[in-house]
Length: 190
Length: 211
Image 1: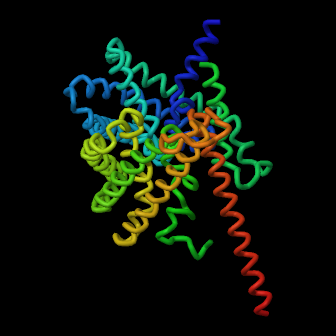
Image 2: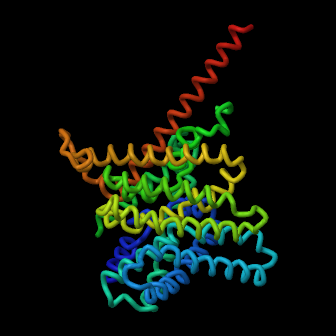
Image 3: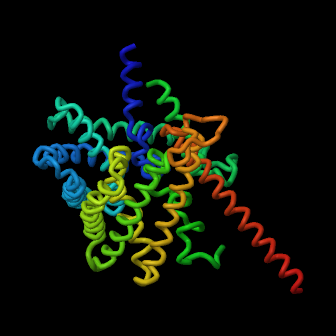
């Protein structure tokens, strides 16, 4: 029973199903297993590292200067963006051309930036969450949530893009309605 | 349809950023349930996107792609600062309601990624006109979505009670937003396909009569 509760809590906290963050990237990730692995892994890296940086930004940002938060988050993500590309260039020179597109897609994504802002908002409401560990844990879980949502969509991707679906609803519209139905199911479990 | 490809008006209908490109859909799904939210989002999106793309177009094309994307994101994040301060004056309640979707408008894919493939390949005058109509395309979808969802979910229009018999409260929830946008995208495509086939039928008739 605890496991079921945990699964429900995990799905209910999913940023895609509950907040529609990173939906466009999800559609790209669901196209193939290769895309899914690449994009999901990159997004998880960005959310995990990004939330770590968000903690530092939130700790030093003076009260009343919240409008600068986005600029500082963007700067932090930019640093990681370059670091990740440099790391890939030296670690996987053969696959660099292939892998860098996933990094480009993930860097300034709604899923990543939304995770940072969501965690920041949670920490503002509950001061016990204002720790580096909590921030990074939330970022990692958000990345896992993206993978879960991408897997749910991948399972139906071919059918939603098949010729059996009316031409006007094939692909994007059908996927939006499909995510809507999954989101409704998760919402009803809350 | 081919004749209209590449037109500066594409952003409104032929290549609408939301309905065709599925870009910037998060705020439409989550915050597009009332006209008041829509007004604040439309204002912020229009100002941030227009200024960001316009200023970013001056970033040298010789710079590597990564640096250009980063610069675009940093420019839009900087523009967000005064826009947010102004929004607090103009729409004081909206900031709290819209929450995280307000700053996320500044790093939307139309600014960060699509500007490279769509706008920066055009001349500056054409780019400005095209950008204006892409923004208008988003604004129209946002407004239409908000009007219909507010009416059907809450039975109001801009917070004024309207005479609606049946309310669908789920339309005000995120899942309602997903489903509604999916239906709108489907309808939009259906209209485009019908328009395309009627045009090609007209062409065929003209060819036959021309013979």
